[in-house]
Length: 227
Image 1 (spheres, one colour):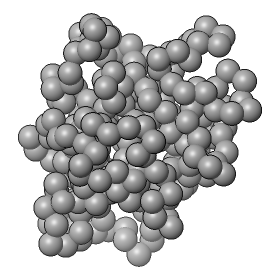
Image 2 (tube, helix red, strand yellow; image 1 turned 90 degrees about the vertical axis):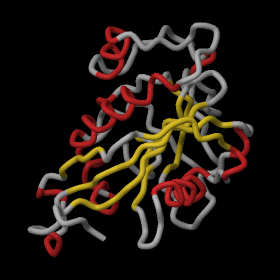
Image 3 (cartoon, helix red, strand yellow; image 1 turned 180 degrees about the vertical axis):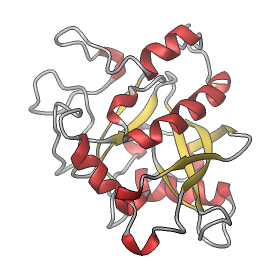
Image 4 (cartoon, one colour; image 1 turned 180 degrees about the horizontal axis):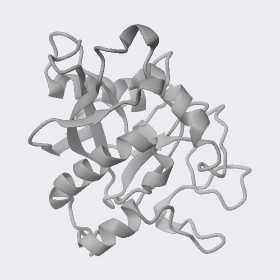
C-alpha cells in the first residue's frame, strides 16, 4: 500500500524502561540494530498498527505499555534503488513513518522475541536514549535523529539521568558507539551468558556478534524485506 508519492505508511516504536533507556534490537541474522517498526495494513490506523507490531516484534500487549507521545507528522526516508526489488522500482520510493514513544509498565520478562513464527530480532538490550546511529542502516539514520529529537521532550526525567541538551544528543547520534571501561555493564544493559564483557539480553537459542559494526553491508542486504 503506497501513497501517491511512492511512500509506504509505517510506524516506528521507541520503547522506554523505568530508567528512560530504550529497547534496542539486533535484527535477526545481521549485525544491524534498530527500533521496532513495521507497515500499516489496509484498514488500520497508526496506533492500531503500532500495537500489532509491538506484539509481533517484542511480544508486548497494550496493557504492558503507556503511550507517552507520537510524532506530529509523517517522517520520510528514501530507500536507495539497489535495496529495492526489481518489480518495485519506479513506483516504490521509501517509507513514511509515525513514531510512538512508549513507557514499559510491565516487566522485562514480558518481552518475547519469539511471539510469532517470523521474528525480527535475535537479541536486545536497554540502551541510552541517544542511540549510536552508526549501527543503523545508513538511509534510516536521518529519520531516527528526527524521531528521537522530536520525542525527547516527553521522556521522563529519572534521577537526572536523561539529558536533552544538543551537545549530548550529537555525542550519541553522530559520535558512534560510546566506549565503556572493561566490565562496565552496570545499569545500561544485561549480561549475556557465556560472553565475557557483553551486556545484552539474549533470548533462548539466540546468538550474538560482539562487534555490530563489522558487517553493515550484510545487514543492508537483509533490509530489503522490510524497507
